[in-house]
Image 1 (cartoon, rainbow, N blue to C red):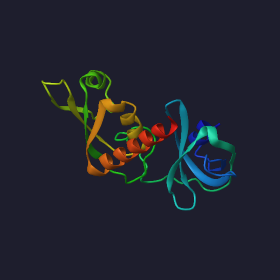
Image 2: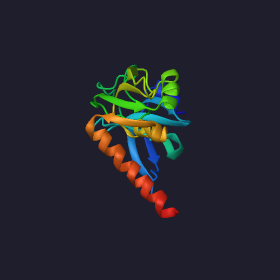
Image 3: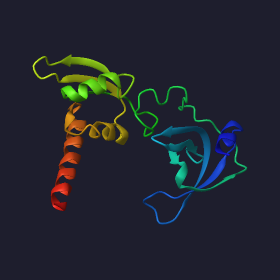
Image 4: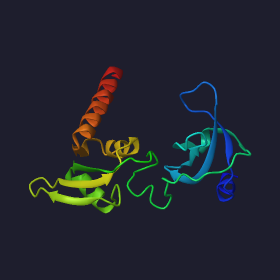
Length: 183
């Protein structure tokens, strides 16, 4: 039904249950796009009151009903290119890609070179002594980017930008502390 509502440019009232909320929340939205990431589907839409873009995970939508509110496009949303510079689905209009560099061990470098983390990925340099490589990507920094980097464990280290390095180091320290506390 959501695909048809998008195709018909139909305004919707959606009851949505975020993980963090006790009760469903109501949104009046203009739906634009369905997108899948890691086996979860998302509806990209704008809030009717101010055209603020956001996404809703389909598995947390409680109810959808068409409503009689004039449909409006968001002039800042370009569905053809909105996701060009993002890993995953977390991005706001106006987010700019950052130049991110990371070092990978010899083992991870082989994997990353043959299965890039993003289409913008470039090989910056390789260390002939230990086989490690430095890669770069140009993406919006978001939780999915951090998740991908963390999935490589100690085989990948962020090098820049500084705020991303600091955030990642903090999260890894928290994970290590939690692991140590459980032993």
